Image (tube, rainbow, N blue to C red; front, side, top):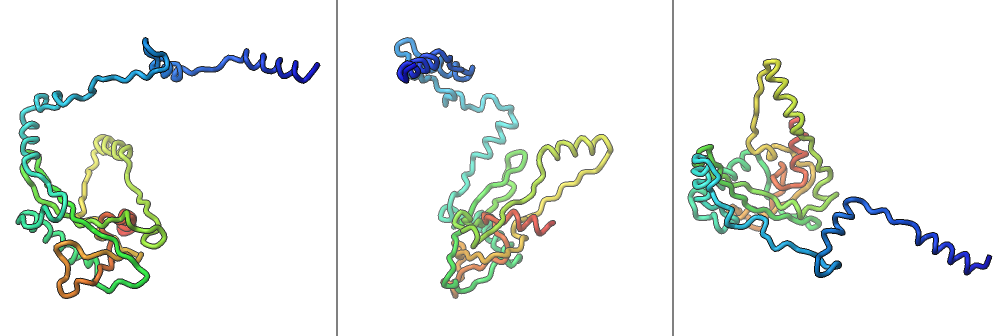
Length: 237
């Protein structure tokens, strides 16, 4: 038998092989077909969540009152928007007092082979269950995305409790009559001891006027650092 006849036979056999189509592929193929054009793509013009549906009519009375109180005050997005407001000035003073009491950093001259990371203020209004303002919280956060692996940080993992574990413990405590206690550590990450050399610019509004060119060498972890969760885990471990 010649080579040409063998190739024709193999091609004929391959043409008889049926393609396998999964249910998902058939559904997609059917969705792509339109009456006018089988190769066209049909796109829905219906708005899934129209703005007209976003109302407060579905809320109960006390939830509606809570929502109204919450949206009355707008949280600043940067230091320039917050500075000059006594509420936010006091919140920033409270945060800086906590940082100073914890000896979070020391001011030094930046070494020639090192670089600094920046920081920013993050503002949050804490509300009570009835929607009233509980406190104005200002937090100094380091811009950890500028850190370099192997220089500014190493490991970043931190063990946490899964919600599955919590759901198991609560019914067990209820069945056996155990007492459950919850503890909240204020500024938890600030208690972690920092092993790496991390340098940060002085925070906006609190630059030391006598040494404006110095930088902060972090001795304790700061919110926003890559290794902050792990340092806290090591502290309590």
